[in-house]
Amino acid sequence: MGVDLEVVFSDDNVIAALIYSDPVRSPWLLFCIYGPPRKAKRKRFWAKLEEMVKAFSGPWVVFGDFNSIKELGEKKGGSNVFGSSVNDLRSFMNNTGAIDLEFSGPVFTWTNRREGLANIKERLDQCFCDHEWQNIFPKAGIRHLSNSNSDHNPTLMDTYMEETAPDRPFRFEAMWTKEESSKEVVENAWLTSVEGSQGYRLARKLDATKRDLKRWNKNCFGISRERIKELEAKIARLQVSNPTRGKF
Image (cartoon, rainbow, N blue to C red; front, top):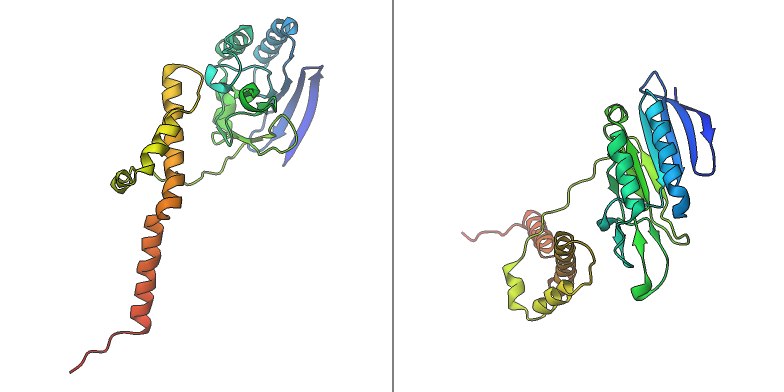
């Protein structure tokens, strides 16, 4: 069948389209969003979006640049903003039963492209759906793609996200403590500047410590387990190709 699209509404901030696609027989409603950057227009925008979502009896999904975040962890740099835009987005989710789709790729989708302490990053591009839509597309998710020229990362809504192999669990190696430079790696990672709640700061510092120790280990020791496997395989090949002859 493929996909057919019928635009049913559009203005400066919303394009609503009925989507006819496999595997569903009845259409679902897609809202493509550009949230107003000016605070004066946001209340009206959210009220209108909520009204349109509630008026549709079928499955729906809302996707785009909301110019809003829903929690402090979706912003890095600048002031800690928990203002009206955050409350408006949360209210929309609570009032409509919206589900925040999982994403892959970088956390932040927008940056002001300034350097140093003036740099601000936020996750402004998001995707929400109702339970009915998620039941139809249980593997759906969002991909935050790489960016080179724009202040926004391209975002792709994928109704069937391929599962990726899980990351190898992080293990602290006892041999690291014998190297004096390992202490400096941990100290520098722990001094990373992070804004947010106490729990959020702790989680990010632990992530930084893990990342930096992995990089340091690779430079200092090489990838030990992989190297051991390579040597074992080489020994096995040598033993097969040139077996030792016994003397009788």
